Image (tube, rainbow, N blue to C red; front, top):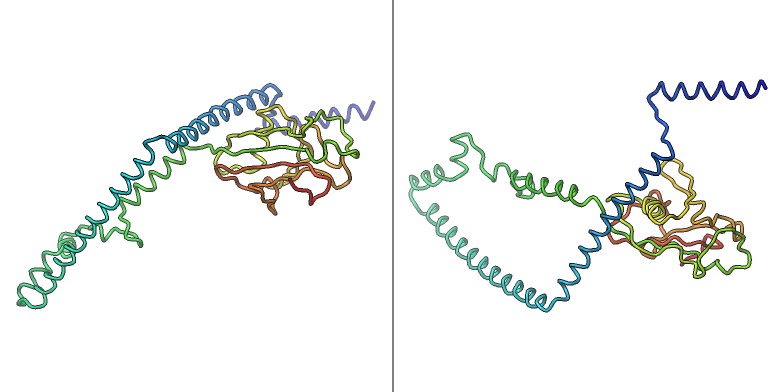
Length: 281
């Protein structure tokens, strides 16, 4: 009886501490609602990304695509020839100006210096584009426009598309497999695309795919590291002491945990269940 009262007293103190520090406890309904909202947002983003990819493919395979490319090449050659002629004319003009300065009288040289853009800027106290240019000859206006465009792109494209496969095909018929999980006959638990935010990790993609497709997921997080213990009810060590889940990205097995690998648009992720750590798919 004393132990029951002690446990209730400790629980009450913990609740008071949590409420006092401003912490809130998320209810099951709130958690499920949050998961559902995120899943709908990802689904909408994925549809948009897939439609964009399909539209690009249709454009590349259209009959007019090669003609457009040919026109672009022709335009490029015309522009190149025009630039060459302009550059030649400018060089000629510069040569004439240099000759004038070097061979003309002192008064002519003085007039040329006073009417140059840089001299005018110094006399009036204003800056020219050359004065505000960066180390790479980029003007302040161009730099500002570039930064504005970059910020806009980050705002309008918060999602990227990745492909994810979850499989246990190499152990589904293994006689040593001991599990109550209902596994597909071919071992393919999931094979499809998922939308994740730009900068998300492999674990974020796995969790998003699991939430979107009703796949159970068990994991342990420690700081920035994440260890996957179970996917779809198939736990580690159920096919021997070294069996468990491994992941690869673009057919490469990284030397970093899935929580520390940052994805890029179009990456292909595979989570495979193996008997040993060296098993690969």
